[in-house]
Length: 105
Image (tube, rainbow, N blue to C red; front, top):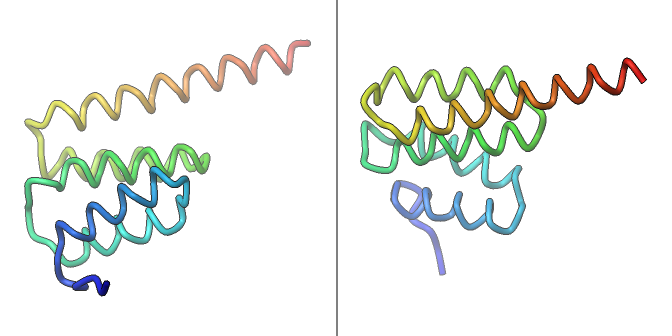
C-alpha cells in the first residue's frame, strides 16, 4: 500500500503509528512532513503535541519547548497544546530536582 505524500491526514496517522511503535525518529520525520505540507488543519495541534513529546523522550527539552510555543502561536486557544506545555515543563522541573538530589549525594 502506497502512502500519498500529500495526504496530510495519512501522514498524521503515520506519525501516531510510529510513535506507538516507539520508532521516534520516523515519527518525528512524519510530523515534520505534515507541518511542511499543510496549512492550518484540525490535526495541527495534535502534531505539535506529538512532536513535542517525541523531542522530550529524546531529551531535547529546548527544542520541544520551541515546537510547543510555535504551536501556541498558531493555535492560541487550543487547551491541548497548553496541557502538553505544562506536561513538558513539569517533567523538566522534576528532572532538574532529581539531578540536584543526585549531585548532592
